[in-house]
Amino acid sequence: MRLLTIDQANLEDEHICCALGGDPQNRQRAQTKKDWLKERFREGLVFRRFDERGKLFIEYMPVEKVWKPIIGQDYFVINCLWVAGKFKGTGLGRQLLDECLSDATARQKKGIAVVTSTKKKPYLTEKSFFIKHGFITVDTAPPYFELLALKLDPEAPTPVFSEKAKTGQCANKSCFTLIYSNQCPFAQEYIEGMSRVLKKKNLPHQVIRLTTYREAQELGSPFGTCGIYFNGELRTHELMSDHKFEKFVDGLIS
Image (tube, rainbow, N blue to C red; front, top):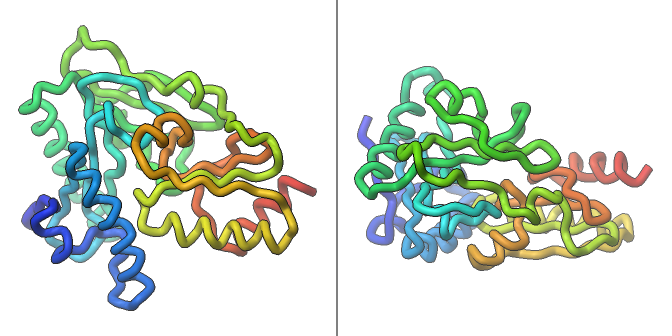
């Protein structure tokens, strides 16, 4: 199985793993992600996947321009490492991680970091995979986020969540705040659906789309791609269907 690097030269001709269907809806989802990637490549983002039609990829970028509230220097941060379905347990995840490690070594990075969680959560790579390969927990943020790191230079400073991220709070203390970026091809679609649910229930809410890494580092949740806040408190990072989000909202306001 061959490993491909997706970049400006081949982005429009290659699939980017998450939105695979050929129908108009999935093509639009994929294009949303590709539009985001076009700008991120110049910020140092790396996207590698196996030449298989499935979710078999790793995406990472320099901590200085990562779309998460992480403070550090000379680290790579893994945005996503995904090996799905029948390919689990085949060693492909380790191969993808090794690609990042080799790249970090070649570029004289101090280490690699990744955001995960205390318990298995949707959209977050499992903590156990990284612990198995030498990562350790170096910081935490509410309600359940953990920052893991693998140091390549034992003397290097450790990356941390920003102080704002550690509060688990956003500026808007009134009802709901939905903060997201187009890093995930499904984010905008789901956020629009959640906004419709809140409008139907006549619940005040604010939607913030992050458009730069500086905004993401200042305003984003530890997940970066999505943060759902209620009365100023971060409650979840999960993108939800309308039905699931409605139940989630009812649980908060009942």
